[in-house]
Picture 1 (cartoon, helix red, strand yellow):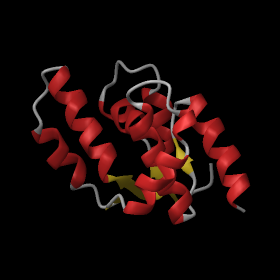
Picture 2 (cartoon, helix red, strand yellow; picture 1 turned 90 degrees about the horizontal axis):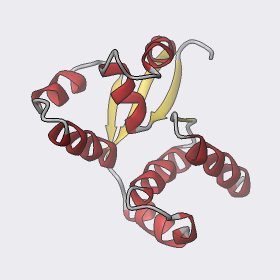
Picture 3 (cartoon, helix red, strand yellow; picture 1 turned 90 degrees about the vertical axis):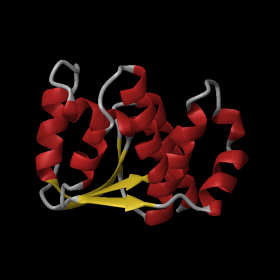
Length: 132
């Protein structure tokens, strides 16, 4: 990874940074250090909230996360929704809708997508190539 890069960040990367017992924690922290700007789609913040609630973790951690100057919260748009609907064949599980919204944000902004979800990353690379 090159320093000072800007990327769209998937929820699983945020979770890996926060929780030291996550299998990708060290990798996520090293990645975070290379970022200049981390664009986080609003849907990823919602997913993080659900994750914290599910695991009975105080939601105030979201406020602390958002104080990081690298973070730029990005609103999801109608374009993201239509993108997701147009790629409905890629939706196999309930959380795939959110993943497609995050993927759409990366394509819309023309930024790399950082995720530990290999299936999502493969789809991103395929669709990004198709969009060019």
